[in-house]
Length: 420
Image (tube, rainbow, N blue to C red; front, top):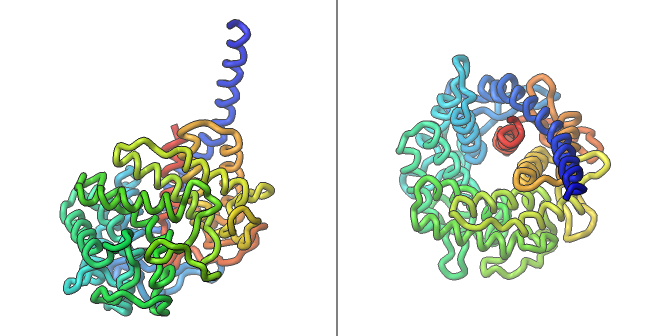
């Protein structure tokens, strides 16, 4: 027994030393959120003339006026400003709840289809619909935003809208024959044909990992707030389908698309997997299970993290690559902002669950890569993407697919985990 005590004390000391870099970085990131990142979005992205948000900013070219507003990023901005307020970041100079409120009013007034239900895909800057299609990917982010705005504001009306949209999806998009949800529709919810070019985000006529993942994400938060039995049933189904078909226990068999009957898609354009979505699924799976009071599937969680670390991670420089196939070397070694954010979020949850030196080293190295190659030091905003060695690829800081959701969410998680 005496021999065991020094070893135990050594282990505790070693873990304390490992924790120190994360604690230091958490304090740095909190300061960046308070002083740079959130103020930047508040000051530059709000459309003070029309409402909603203007997302067109580039590290090299500077800010410009976008041509349209997309429901995905409008909703994500509402979500982030709501979260920022709920987490205590609002102050006398910047009220993040007000920033969320004006975005909420804009999507209700201009994106909500009061005739057919659901939310349009795109509007012009003033709010006139320019693409009236309904894509479930976008609808999922509306639910996600409405729930968070409800949490931050205490207003029941956003939650009513969220439940109304959920019921519309169940009526219009749910597949009663095979389960899951079809994803691409015209304004009146007529399904688009297979590979219809009018479809945006994933492939019309197929079921996608991307949409089913984010629908699960939205249903998790909707269920936690409402405890509605129908929402729980849908959440359970989305979780099961994701775990079985898109992000299975063998992470190398993850895929982008399935046919409506869940059979494999053989078209080579659908081949491969996304390391970023795999690790994002891992932590969102645990979040969904905890919201339902179920035992977390840590085995499947770690299977996806370990696969990403083994196959998709840059051990030399840090950072997670974009895409690959099975256990082969990645075929796309681009480092995209949201992929790094989801790796940070997933490995944060892994280290909160149990300490692991390999995970911690990979997390620290990724944070260092992002800070060195992807972050504008003036405002802390990340660029869209860089090459494997950190050379710029897409220097955009804000566009119709890039708001403040992935990175701010990851940094808030990191700060809460290690900023004690």
